[in-house]
Image 1 (cartoon, rainbow, N blue to C red):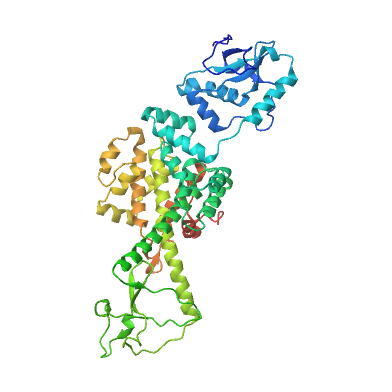
Image 2 (image 1 turned 90 degrees about the horizontal axis):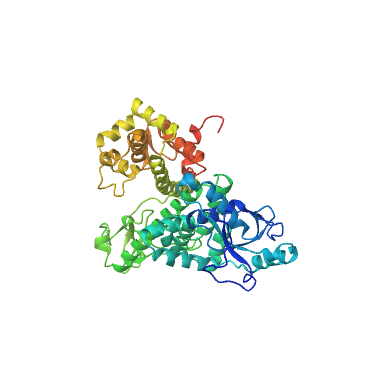
Length: 500
């Protein structure tokens, strides 16, 4: 590998470097200069290593020649180390072995004081770009590239193929939020997702907490983060559905009833409890022209019709004994609120769960635990599996197999594209789809109690075994998947005694 110095270079030359020589050095021949001012955090991070692997060291380092033929880096030692690491795996990864551009400062041999000063100056003058400038530059650079260049650039930056889209979305955050995201260690995709919830109260704190849990408990994966994002998306969709329902009522000329303070009396009455002056029942149709025609929305954002002041508008209240509000009524209301929240959380948890299954299915090798689980279900044929297969609905199978348009692509055709050694992956996708379709709706009939119930209360041992399998596989994959809070709640009674 060439190490001979050259006096020419295709880059600007500083006054101090005018008398030095430019060279392309073998990274293996570079060591740390004892006068390098950077002593804390001298190791290259993963982001720098990925960049050097993809495009090499772009900015020249500065070195002093040593008597043994090696070169001591007093500027750019982290870049030199990244080049050493990149070259070590270059052949195995099919990448070129690269040299490092360097200014060779023979004039500084023996001049340790000036060498250390230049090293200090370089580190002090290096000012980091602001988070916003970084995002904007990444977005503009990636958008202007061809697909081939973009793939190479995203590898160098250590970001996903959708980095341009994420960079654009992340810029919606204010500067303070961008700094907090960077300080918290969020990657580009997470920062973009954070920007999606700026209008959701408390979302930033919840996501920060989830990210911290992933670092502390999840091995650096994204399991807790993905679950919190799914829950926020469900809450946001619920809020948007309510806003839409309110807007539709407003367009129809219907006024919404607002909340009534606890110290005030609510004069509004639901139409089913009222009659006309002649005793005929009231409905939306025959009450719509009443000046007191009002509405409230139920938990599913459906309108409930009211009259704002029945006495003022000539309506009568249906005779019925008035029951005093009891503690049982309050408990019932609290239980209803809990049911609504758990149902929403259960449905939201399906997103991260299915994304994790897709990653397992599309992986090169299916974990042995997943293969054994699929084999067990296919051999035992539990009742839910037979019921599911009789419907012959395979859209979820196509989804888990990785189809881009699962509603259009046949599961059999997608599976046919899998190589022979990944038959187990396809079978696991089918078994997982049976579970996913069967537990999509949180409501079910509890056979043990012989009454209707909810899966988040009592999923049964078969469904619980599926959730516990995914939890175990997610933990084994560095915390890339975690059960949501509502799922954890559902499987408490099905964990091994030692875990419980």
